[in-house]
Every structure is written in structure tokens, then in C-alpha cells.
Image 1 (cartoon, helix red, strand yellow):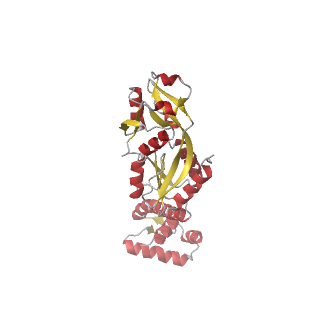
Image 2 (cartoon, one colour):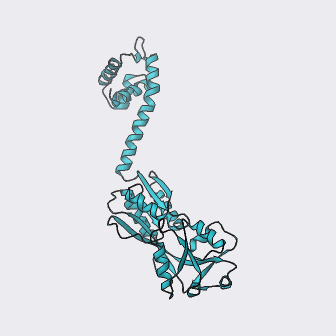
Image 3 (spheres, one colour):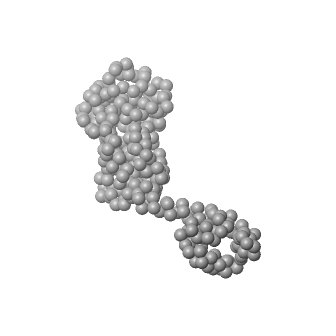
Length: 298
């Protein structure tokens, strides 16, 4: 049985007239009659009662019609899905991000992409940097957003800067330095620092050391935390100071923690990362949107 036979049957069942159904299908009426007879022979069931001047559905015909309509609808949906894919309108794009860090560029690009590709499926995954690198390596995600330049030990990993943000000092409000409007970076030399875990955020420790050495000292890193919320908790307990992206002000506030700009002004970049060997046309278009909407670095 072919799909066309099912389509022919539904047309006749809806018209209950071979001549009108043939006209709708752009077929010769004898040909349509023969196709329906072939379908009945294959099924071993009469679908139409032809014993009177007009045809009507048999009990088997009514059952077959109830099953045939959703079958044709499903076939049509499959055809449209494949055609959309051929026009690069559908498919799946998996995106990793770091909460409270990638939100600006992520929301802007997602909004633009959805307007262009409403049929595409977008799946978002809150991951730390190391999880995103692993997911890209294992092809579990197509694109990631991180706030550290990715390591250069993978020739397949590509990155593009998508934003620049200020780095602030997060400190306990009981510290005398917290009274300042701006915190001289060099004044933090006697303090212990809290930084993200190197396991979860490769390169974070090196960036902190590079930043502080630019001010003339090497930081004493006392704690490494698995995430930003844990860092804020350490600072709230007066166990150290942290240098955090300005977006972290939006994290749930903890009593006793204040954020202060640094002197001199310290900035850091955020990046989109992807595999260069990923052939996805959706990824290609998303990267173009990122380029169009990313703020230009000064």
C-alpha cells in the first residue's frame, strides 16, 4: 500500500463521488476507480458500498478513514519538517552558558535567532567553563559562552570575543577599605583572595595572578570555590576578597558583602566558543548574529 492510495481513498470518502474526487486529485475517473479497487483488494476489505445509486462507506471504510486522516497529516508534517531543514529553518542547537555572566549577549542573540528561525529547537545548559569544554569535545553542545579565554591546547576549538566587562572587588563591609568609593588594587596585597576552582574554570587562577602582578604584587589565594555563589559566601564570612565580573552584582545578595570598582580600572572579556569542524548551518547563522550584536571593544 502506498501513501497515494490512502490519499485517493480519503478524497473519495470525503466526496462520496468518484467523479468529483477524481477532479480534485487531477486524475481520470477510471484510473481513480481502479486505484481504489486495488486498495480494497490489498486490504481484503470493501471500503465503499456501491450497491445503490450512490456510494457510501462500509463499516471497514469508516474505520480506515479514521486512521487514514491522521496518517496523512503526519506524512505532511514529515515532509514540511524535511523541507524546512533543507531551507535551514529547523534543526537543533545546543548552547552552554554561565549563569549571570552570559545573560546580556545570550538574551540578545537568542531573541534575534528565534525571529529568524522559529522552527529551530534551542536547548540551553547552565555549565561552568570546564563542563562546556568537555561538552564541546564530546559534541554534546554546539556553542558555549564563557568568561575566560579558552585554553589553546585544542586546534578544533574556536572562540570569538563577545563582550568586555568591568572587574570589581567583592569584600566584607567590615573591612576599612570598603569605605572607599574605589579600591586601589595594590591596597589588596596584604589580603587573602578567594578564586574559582581551576578544575571548573581553567585559567581563572592565572588571570587573577596576572591582574595582581600588573599592580606590583602576587596574590595569596587562600580558597578555591566551585562557583560564584560559594565565593560570595566566603567573602561574607570575611575569609578573603574576590575580584568578580560586574554581572555578579545580580547574584542573590549576602549581608556583609559590598562591590567596589578598582583603581586602576580592570576589565576582562567574555567569549563564544565552538568547534571549527561543526557543519551545522544553524550554528553558522547563530555565529553571524553574535558578530552582528556583540558590542565593539573600545
